[in-house]
Amino acid sequence: MFSWLSLSSWLPGLPSLEWGSGLLDCFLQGLIGAFGVSVLNSLLKVYFFVGCANDPKRQLEKDRLQVQWALLEPVHLVGLALCLTIVGTRVAALVVLEFSLRAVSTLLSLGKGSAGPERLQLYLLSQYALGCGLVCGLSYLQEGAPHATLGLLLSLGLAALLGSGARRLRRHVCRLYELHRGERACGVCLGLLAGAHALPRLLGRALALAFAVGDLAAVALINRDFLSTAEAVRFWTPLTICYTLLVIYMQEEQRQPQVGLRSQVQTVLVRMGGLFVLLLTVGRWLDLLSLLVSLLGELWCLVGVRTLLDLCQIQDFTSQKPTVSTPRRPRPSAPAEPQRTTTS
Image 1 (cartoon, helix red, strand yellow):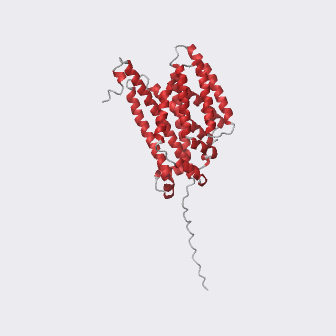
Image 2 (tube, rainbow, N blue to C red):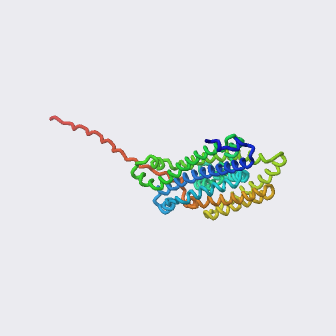
Image 3 (cartoon, rainbow, N blue to C red):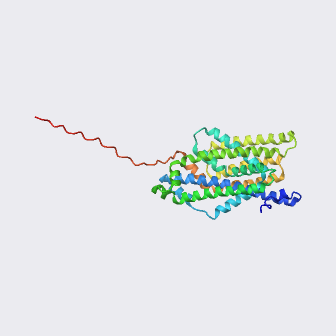
């Protein structure tokens, strides 16, 4: 039954069959990366909605998050999967390394335990880079596997299960959180009421692990194309200079007030422009086309989180820890002292 799942391993003599199997593997990797981005997006929306629902002054933002776009969610998922499929592992590796350096620089400048909105904004902006990191990691780990397509299908099933669970959680919270919070009848909503403030910390650890694996895979995939050390030096030297200049530019941009989605689009254009100039000197023509697709993927992810980016500018969610009121127990009254009778 599963003999057709990795036909290139059973019939290696057909080059067209190998090409078709490779295209299927690339699509599966892109779809898995898109599901990973969907999980992150859903959990961030849950966190922001709980923060707005716990603050009576944020009813307008809560209503914006409560709007259901049931038809646009599959379109966004498929569009992102196509971008991750077409972009290729080489440009995806460059995107992962660039974002990782920028994220490390941002976190070091923020310091430990401070600047909550900037950290949340960094999580929102990491979505496309996270998808590229998952694609790089899967491509490196599945390279040379005899049944890579079957392994990718199993991974896709797990990713789809996690994505479906995260979407169901978001819909449940957006529809019933306020009702269950008052009635105290749902363990999920009560858990979010008491511990939603810890969700960004858990997401930060998961993202750190994902990008660590993605960075190692990205370096290995880039070095795979070099036949000598001289070629590697000719590529990595201008790449390091380009990344350094981009990080310095981003640090200067962070000191200026952000304007929301427009500012982030401008930042994406500057980053992709720097990589475009770099690939003009040390890249290939196919890399330039893949970089244009990567630009579309970045903008595609930004459009999906524009409401959350606006919330990062107007509210510090990290300082909101909802207080769970507990009924006070009446203090036991002191026993009355027996009256003393005096005998005359």
